[in-house]
Image 1: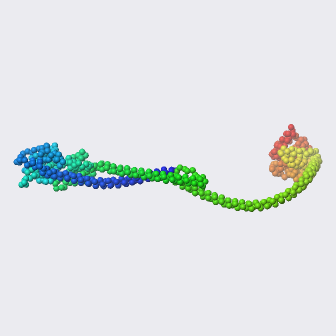
Image 2: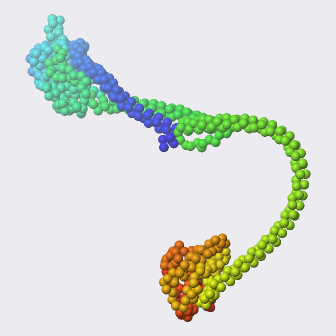
Image 3: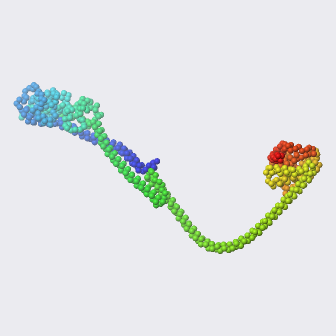
Length: 621
Ligand SMILES: [Fe+2]
Ligand SMILES: [Fe+2]
């Protein structure tokens, strides 16, 4: 399956997969590294910011004293306190001012110096005579009637202290006469609250938030972002949402406050910034990865295209130059195809080389054979000429021989005719001889049968019945002739028997019958030396044997008795039954047939009886 994918697609998939995989792994480590770097740099920047914030704050605090010094040196201020009716005597009432008084600079100039909340003008005795408020709330009593300590500490510097439990920045500067006596004192004061903090940072814009925290529970006293961190809340409630940049106490000599000054930055802002940086970096990396994958894919395309071209060239070379049948190009891995084509080509070249070598060997053999054949051919040509001569001579000899053969043939034909004539003569002579022989035998047995009137013509009839049965059973003609002769001769053994036994009008005694029973063996004995009658001897000897073995002279049974002897037995017995006897007349054909049936299977052979019954029924019809 993998092999069938084209190399281009395979390489593209691998390139894209590896590219994506590597970029994911790199992205993980790169993001982690970038985050660390980002936080390290951020922390450095935050520290810088925090110290800058603090510096700005300190500068703002210092600017209060500088502003006070500047204001008292102004002509407007000096002119005001130089008036003859400038406050002297006991202080009874403080003049509360809402408009910028003439001892202060023009409002526009004053705003550019500081954002003062309260400005207090004291007389030479140190009693506050005029109070300007740039704020809805009236100045606290502790400012209107400052303690000696406050007056002393605030003189010539910016002092941060608590007035009525509210942190305040206070500064004071005095104008003295030529004798060094204080003529008037200017005190500037502002509560250090959120407004103050915001003003201290001027127009600097950044995401950090400044906080003034008081006490161990870090209660928020002032903040540059009161909407996010309300005044009076505890910073612990918000610290999870912010990163603390800088943290410091007012540890300078001009401060009596036990408050913490801190700069914080919202974590959400940092995270958004971090996400932004990482996302921009990731976009760049994705773009680079994409460009790398595309470049690699293009190179792959170029390489696979060249591999395909090479494959086609190899196939073309195989087909056109080497004349080899190349395999069909299958879609799939081009490298695999090329490798297969090369292998196939190599095999084919090896095969071709082998075939060429074999062909060369064959050619060399053929060449040798051809050379031998030419040599042989020349020899044959000479022999052919000789043979031609011999052939002519032979033809002449053959012509003579043919004539001779023809003559001999004619002679032979004549001889053959003569031979056939002779054969016919011999045949005639043989037939005559046979007839003579039969007639002689017939005459002899007839004379034997005629010795008793009861047996007259017996042998002739037995011979006739036997021949009929043999024909019915399909015997060959030669065998039938033998059966005929045996029928005539079957009782020849009776020649030596006393005539009275043959002619006895009563039944024979046992001894007499024993004598009569010898005739089959005697018959065979008489004829045994005549070569031509050899086949008839078993029929003569066994014509009184029964198939149940109760016959004589040998008492053989069944298949031991030959079929022709069985035929002889049936024919002989039938004629004996049918004959008239001195002690009884003939019992007739019907009885004889019933006897044949009764004794069939015990005395007679069943087939022989059946054949004879058929003959008898035919004769009857
Ligand atoms: Fe007999
Ligand atoms: Fe007989």
